[in-house]
Length: 458
Image 1 (tube, rainbow, N blue to C red):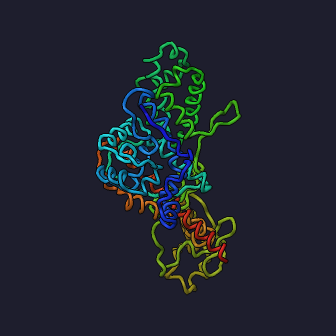
Image 2: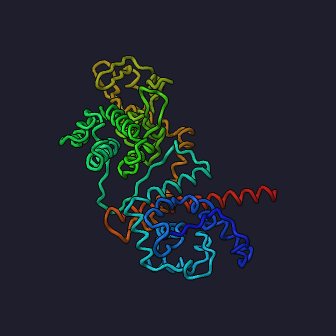
Image 3: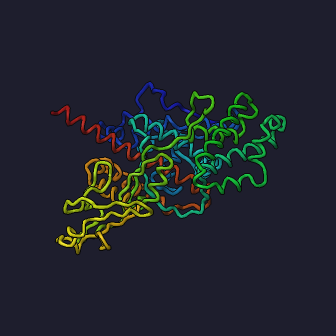
């Protein structure tokens, strides 16, 4: 039998009046207060409650507090022993988890209880819903714009398989059709035969794995529309909508697509408009591939320029990005574009130039030539843009993610997990990521409060 206490339910008497004002303020202003106010009410306990009987059996621990404890264990990188002690004895935990009763039933938890509830969450992939609910709530409260994202990497030693977006769509559809055919053959018979052949034939998934990069956008549009049509076809069929694989289709549609009012194009793939990354991801190839997906990759160019030599960046450019003069101000005498662009400068000017030994031009029969590829020109333009105030202002926000990933490792221990296996690794890494969002949101709230107090004093 499950037990649930609504975190928004008010108490007749203040259960925290035993705390001195300053200690109470520390709790409310720190992560315990933020967790209690925003994270705890956002926990989807209904997803956990369905694995317990509503009336029979021994009562569970209060489910909001129990799931909250799983989040805090990963956030603070605690062992099971440490988690049991914190849950039982730590006032910060009691405040964050809204545990107000003074009884062993409320404030004590056995190792088996902790393990059983963790197993329920991880076995049913509920950590992803917990992460999304908590993160969406923080984004709403602190008005975070998710159109712009920042990217960095952290290495977790694991052998989990990764799927691209085409793989996510095609395998979700494949799994749904297999389960539908097995569980509800009558409903399966109503599915378009072409769609069944497309996703259930022996070579179906293999074909999707061999899609050319140039055709990926077209393929993604097709598979997203197929997934949307399946969701629409069975959304009124209760026996089908209760299937886990159908709920998976709904989740993919919700996370990967925007719904439109266009009957011919009812779904539109979600894409970030801007992605900020460090120089490791800032290669020309990555920038070009990102542009193919209508994403602007903002990242510094790798490598450095020899300051003792002149480079392509030292030449003078027009507003359209074309070279109009050499570093000494002399205009080109000849321009030819093939696989490489070749720009010829008057030999008289070049022979008498004081910078000739430092200049990248090469002597030819009639002219001194500057030759470069389109890729070299793109990199040069990026280097020039990186010196502008506009780029520096945009990229300065990128530095925040470096600290975030460092904190993700340092505070949660994500690089040295105590578990093994895909299910356990996914559970820990996901809830630790939510924990970092909580820490950073708490730090922002503290800064906002301090600024408000400063303005009031002024």
